[in-house]
Amino acid sequence: MNENEKLILKLIKENPFISQQELSESVGLSRPAVANLISGLVKKEYVQGKAYVLNEQSPIVCIGGANIDRKFHISNQLINGTSNPVTSESSIGGVARNVAENLGRIGEDVLLLTTSGNDAEWQHIADLSRPFMNVDYVEKISNESTGSYTALLDQEGNMTLGLADMSVYDKITPEFMIKNTYLLNKAQCIIADLNCPRETLEFLCAYAEKKHIKLVLIAVSGPKMNRMPHNLHAVDWLILNKDEVEAFVGKNAENNDQLTDYMNEIYSLGVKNIIVTTGKENIYYVGEMGSKVFDVTPVKEVTDVTGAGDAFSSALVYGWLKSYDIDKIIKFANANASKTIQTPFTVRQDLHEKQLIKDMEEL
Ligand SMILES: Nc1ncnc2c1ncn2[C@@H]1O[C@H](COP(=O)(O)OP(=O)(O)O)[C@@H](O)[C@H]1O
Ligand SMILES: O=c1[nH]cc([C@@H]2O[C@H](COP(=O)(O)O)[C@@H](O)[C@H]2O)c(=O)[nH]1
Image (cartoon, rainbow, N blue to C red; front, top):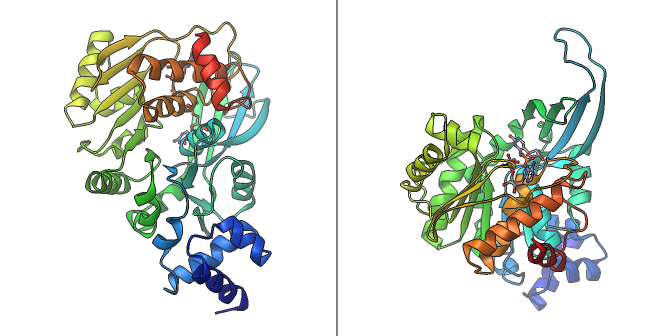
């Protein structure tokens, strides 16, 4: 044991409920450095992680993608096989991370569990995310790159092509989850996106069922629907868009009735509540609170739709955890999504709890 480890162990012995922040102030190291030392002490079995995290609140644990998003705007018709002039911009994203940032801004205690490269991209994501969530338990993997999402947008701002370089999330394994069960056990709710491998999602379903932990699954794209577990009894909410429903059932929905039929097919897998969004069209709900179709709040001028689904899901979870009825839950979700797409940001910068309530009441 080195001197810092000895000092931390002594402080934890004196006060098993000491927080990471207090430790960091006493030892004169940053909070992430303290977190590293503690995980070293846990590995060497001087400290049981379980006893340590008991001191923290019950966080919402978000598991899945934390990406660098790159957007390329093409000003003319795309020509294959040559270089096309574009303008580009980069920001941070990833469905689980976006949801975590929304909820963190609303004022919830949030923890992000994911894997990243040990690179400047992750450092950038961590620096911008840390004010809103705990990123201390993210596992950096030396020979992998941090996840990235590249979108090619046409003149109208619609996505022509999306590229998902996210092999790093294959390392969000059941073993990684098992290593962090003391965090899962404390979770007020687990939100996992379908960037996670299927066996990890199956593990989370089984674990949430056994430990009675609330669980929300969020789809990320059609191609990743093959990760959905087929036993959804532990899932409180499944949130997906129309394309993702179609990819999962392997059939196109020609009309609303067909879409509702497919939702009922998914409902029979045991999930308690399903939400299907269809961009600026309707929102469909099937679940414990009945079966309903909601209108989307019309938006005069859309600035950027990136993050609409994540804003929607976050405010939905917020409303549900507050035990509101389905109409109010959807109002929160609608309000947050419509305000988000009127900003150039993936997560709107003016978001906080009072603002969300005001926006919801004004709908
Ligand atoms: N053009 C739009 N106008 C108004 N609201 C929108 C628009 N696009 C998205 N939204 C809002 O965001 C929600 C999620 O959008 P959607 O595009 O279906 O999700 P995703 O981004 O996951 O594909 C919609 O249900 C709606 O509330
Ligand atoms: O396979 C994936 N594609 C895209 C995303 C993320 O989805 C977000 C865009 O979300 P939306 O579709 O709600 O606009 C981006 O931040 C991007 O990083 C992801 O996590 N996984």
